[in-house]
Length: 193
Image 1 (cartoon, one colour):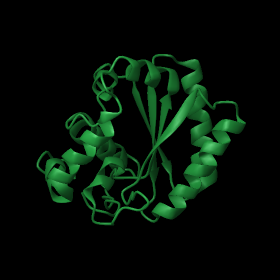
Image 2: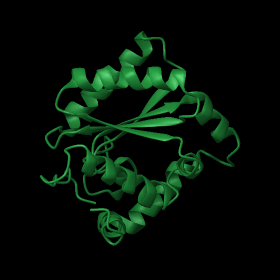
Image 3: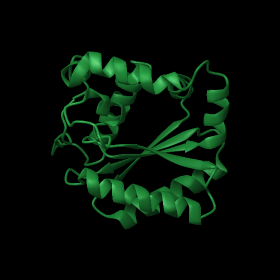
Image 4: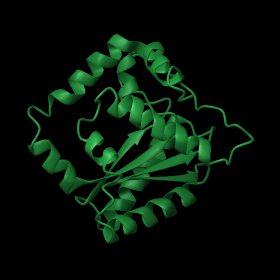
């Protein structure tokens, strides 16, 4: 998987291609490799919502987050929302700053314990790990994402899963085995570029 955001096709809507690439990544990598054992059920049931927003402006990203949280409050048929921040220049450090502000906003708006944000970025890197460690691929996506999760659903899923603490260990081992080129091959071999 490339460590930078994919390029946009100028003949396609600026949001259409990032949404497609994100859906393909979730289908092929997250669900296909079983990185999140709870995702397949929600994906198959059509309970995953996708929203693209221009990612160069935090105010727009925060407004989208606010709208999506309110929609989740109103519509129980949506399990989770993936907000795709469409911006090729949104670097990882700025993204982390935005993530921190978004999490603070969730708490101040009274949503702490109700929703949480899972974070993904094309250049995701765990602090203290070498840049070359394929373990970073567990949180790398084609585009920067704010993935809104319902905490109650997550807790219920974890309670029914044997040894959920082993999920990250398994994912790291699998992705280290596949490596960046192996993950990239899974995407390109299936038309997900």
